Image (cartoon, rainbow, N blue to C red; front, side, top):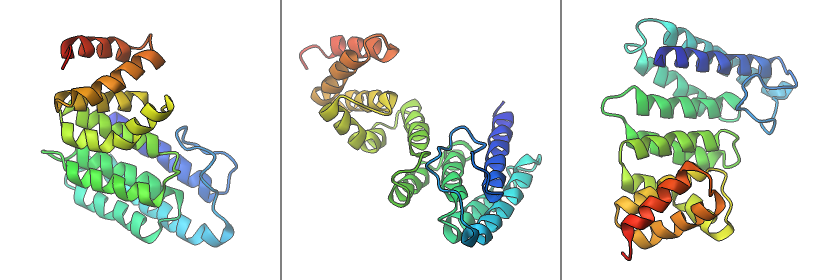
Length: 219
């Protein structure tokens, strides 16, 4: 199933980049927003070079020797990020690298994934891929009970939620509350749980938040 998922993801990304290279008006990958600028004629060279590297990655990833090719795949993604940071595929490459470090290494290279995301946020603060990468990371940290890293990752998101009552990633905010709960920062966890219940009363998060509040009692 994982292999099929990877091939679908690679295929979708390839369609996206070929479309951009041909200067089409719409993106082929659903998760790419229209905010990602289409390359000008001056960018056609770097764009095409990035697409060529991606095609090589795609070929390596399809083979039965994918594990043996992993370091080569990482090197190629890094080339795209380093040499062609302005092309749309650079953002996609960050996501792919983060997924590789989380899913293809045993044990996972969590610190490398977090470092890449921090670098990604500095380069592309308004990227349409930011939320998806954030969720991927927070889900991994939550599943693997990496509470300090999870709390640090979602600190800013949770602060914004507490101040505004709005969130683009409510599940990640819930993960923050869970991290604080497990770190025994009950006061902080409770504030987030209470607001989640208020803003999303019919969600599964609200049900779990109510249980946590009951468990905490007067702590």
